[in-house]
Structures are given as structure tokens and as C-alpha cells.
Image (cartoon, rainbow, N blue to C red; front, side):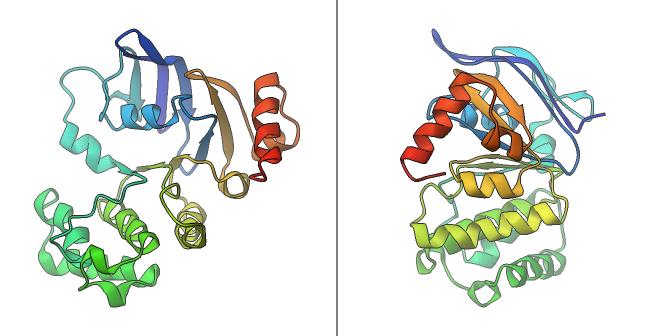
Length: 247
């Protein structure tokens, strides 16, 4: 059984259809990269999986259990499905350590010593243990994004959603954030990423999904999608990236 099943999901904003009868399954330990032009539905899909947006039609399931519609424990859902945005959303009045331990303390009921030890282990792993007592305004954008990823990992999610996490960063800071994602993939974290970083998607993904007009137009292994795409729209999208020097 797949970890995540998206079955015929449609999402409307008024008369605008952002997702159109979209279906996708994700296996445990798989890394899926969502690519496509702006407005194709990548971010909306991630937000629907985490229930930050409500779908109009269809169903989403985790390990066979429905997570859309009424009667779903959203607190439990968001413990199991972490999400990291392009905006870091760190609490400015809290230190790095306080930002990363808040949810485990309040939601999981974790003991403070356990939470702090766990947070420090993560921060050590990403090279930011020395910043544990600093406030977000003392960190670079890349450092803040790395802390945001640690905050999501502190809840031990079974699925991690990453929404254009490098798009707000200066180019020289992108690599340090992608290194963390690369490490998570190597450790078997199940992830779904919306990204414009094609070289990274080629390297880290098990499967690439090209979205067009709210649908998965084409999907397959990176070598196939980037090396021999079948669909005309996929080909045109990749040609435009190559012309812009982004592929």
C-alpha cells in the first residue's frame, strides 16, 4: 500500500480550477519532485495534502486512511505530515532552540530535556548548533530556512512537503539548504518537493511529475523526463528552461 494516495483531486477558487482531477501515489521512502510553470498547481497540491487548503472533489489518503473531508484530526495529521514554505515563518521573539522545541513540547508533550537534546542533535547535523541561542534576525536566509526544516523534522513526520524552499534565497545560500534535503533523501525520508531547481531535482528525485494546468501531464524517472520527455508541453517547458540557462 502506498504511503500517500491522491485520488481524483480537484480544487476550485471560485470559478478558477487550480487542480483538475489529479491522481498520484507516493511510496514510503520515495522522493517526488513537482515541476512545471508558475500557476500549474504545485504549491496548491502540497497545501491540500496538509489540509491548509480544502479540496473541492476527490480524496487524499495516508496509509489507506482518508485525510480529507470531515472528521479528520488535523492536529494529528499535521504531526504526520510536515510542511516547509519558501517563507521561513520562524517566531521572531524566540531563539532557534525555542523555535525548534515549541511544537514537540506543546503538541507532543515531550519533556523539555528530551526536546532540547533532540533539537541540538539536528542543529549539530546541519552545522547550526552554535546558533541555538540566537534569534532569527541574527541568521542569514539560508540559516533560517535550515532551522525551518529542523522545526518540521522535530515532529518526526512520515511525509515531508517542501514548497519552493529555495526561491526566496540568494543564489549563494541555495546549496546549503539543498544539502540538507539531499541528506534527508539519503536517509530515506519520504518527501514531495515543489521546486525550480532542475539540477537538484534530477539528482535527488526518484520520480519527476510535470504539472500543467492543474494536472500531472507527464511523470517518470529523472533520466526519462529530462533526457527523453514524451509530451510536447514537457518538451517546451524544458526548452524554455534551457534557453534561460536554468537546465
